Length: 389
Image 1 (cartoon, rainbow, N blue to C red):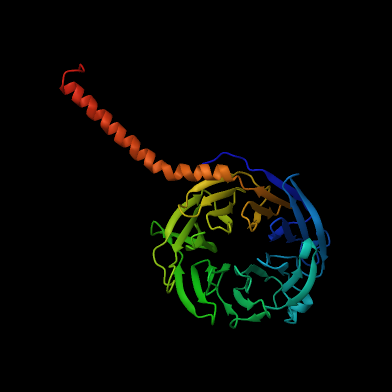
Image 2: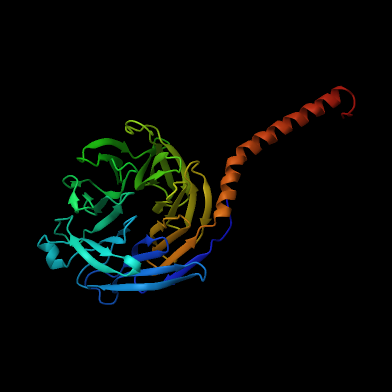
């Protein structure tokens, strides 16, 4: 695996970052803060211009949010329009009244931040619950939100109406919408639940795998990926509950007809520590993850082989990962009050991918050459051309 240290552009902010995403190929938005009634740490949304030539993150705009409301806990940018949706809880009083406008929509044109509207996807009256997941579909026609109390909502972005009544599951970790925009994958700790996007009916339940048939695992994240050839795969990150390791599971989906049910997954160990965040690039060939040792790893999406690992990428827990639309930048942020953008070292990754593709052939070739050499030695001994003692 590569030892190249990628070029990293960084910018220190004065708040812990809980979510980030690219609203344009070179414009990054980060959100976070101290939460409600934490006067020492302000709640913020900040936009940055990524200047690769000068290796700078230049602040374009900043929006100071109310200290009576929560900070942004998750954010997602529309894939085609200058729009951002952030999970921001209303004030404690509003939440207790059941009036939590937790889903905020912002205009992000030219990197400028402006609140457009606010809507509610939660009637929970507990101030401890928050919008844990915010994600657009590939076209931007759908938005899915997941609350920490297990409530999920799928909305049509044309009019912000629900596709079906909100559902609730136990221990929701992540949610994603497939490439065809026909299914929603809900990752809970114990299972992947596949829903129809039309009416919310359960299409399939995929139980969390057990390693060696004994080790219980928890699902941490899920993503749909599609290659340039149109091959779609469902990925899930699983962490054993008894030890600090991380695995990826992959299910190939059918190109035609019904994609579900899926059956046996390919599984590969990719981290020696528990995986905390996960993302996939737009072309579907690179997976990125973060782990509890504060590293960022890159994995070949087809072979599930390691391509590159960056040690100590942040000083504290990494909370968010996001590729830009071109796939040449990976942004990361965390509790160390720092936003970083890594320029993907394409040549190093390609070299490592070719190495893992050719390694089995080289091993076979070595074995054949060794066998031929032994055969020649035996022939020489038997023919008397080589003395033996």
